[in-house]
Image 1: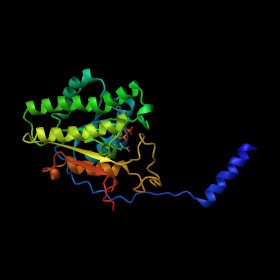
Image 2: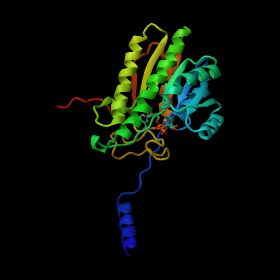
Image 3: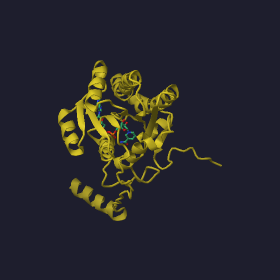
Image 4: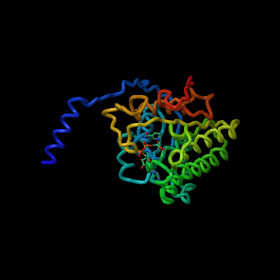
Length: 276
Ligand code: NAD
C-alpha cells in the first residue's frame, strides 16, 4: 500500500517537473601536435580528470606516464590511451624518490608533472571531520603532491633541464574560505602554485594550476550524460574533456609566459561581484 502511494507521488511530481537533461556543446581544438617533446607524469591518471588529460596530451604528441594505486585499472587505461604506467600511491612518501627516478627513466627525462591524484570525503562542516579523515585528505591531496614536486624539481634542476612545468589540480573550492580539509587543501595548493612560481622564476620551469568547478567524474558522482545542475549557479556541471583542454594549453609552449596562474574553470562562478 505504502509503495503504491510512493509511486503515485513520484509520478505526480514528474508530471509537474519533467526530467531535464543537459549536455555540453563543447568545442575541442583539433589535435595539433602541440605537446611534442613533452614527457609527462600524471598522478591518478587512470580515471576522471587524470584520464581525460592523459588522453588529450597523448593525442597532442606527448609521451605520457600515468601513475596510480591499482595496477589492473592502470593497465587498462594505458592500453586505451596508448601511454605508459607505473604503480604509485602518492601518500607513500618513502617511495616518492624511487618513483620519480623510475618514471624519469621510463620517459627518458620527464619535463612535466601533473599533480592530479586526489580524494574528497565530502564533509559538510568541521563537526563531521575525524582526525583520520583529516590526515587521509591532507596526506593524499597536499603532502603527496608537495613531496612529489620536491623530488621532481630536485632532479629537474640538478640536470639543468629546460622548458618544464608543473600543473596542480586545485578546485573552485580553493577560491573561498572553508572549514573542511578539501577546501583548506585547495587553498594551500593555490599558495604553493604561486610560491613555487615566484621562487623558480629564472629556472625555465613554469608552475600553474587549474581549478575546475564540479566536473563529471567518480569523485562527484555526476554523469557526463547529463550535465544539468539546477542548484549550481552555472546551471551545468563540467566535462573532464573541457578541463583537459585548458590544462593542455597551460602546459604547452604557447603558454610560455604564464607561471603562477590559477585558471578557474567554472564560467566565472567564483568571481566576487559588486553588490549595490
Ligand atoms: P576521481 O576520483 O575520478 O579520480 C581521482 C584519481 O586519483 C583516481 O584515479 C584515484 O585512484 C587516484 N588517487 C586517489 N588517491 C590516490 C593516491 N593516494 N595515490 C595515487 N592515486 C590516487 O577524481 P577527479 O574528479 O578526476 O579528481 C582529480 C583531481 O581533480 C583531484 O585532485 C580533485 O581534487 C580535482 N578536482 C576535481 C573536481 C571535480 O568536480 N571532479 C573539481 C575540482 C578539482
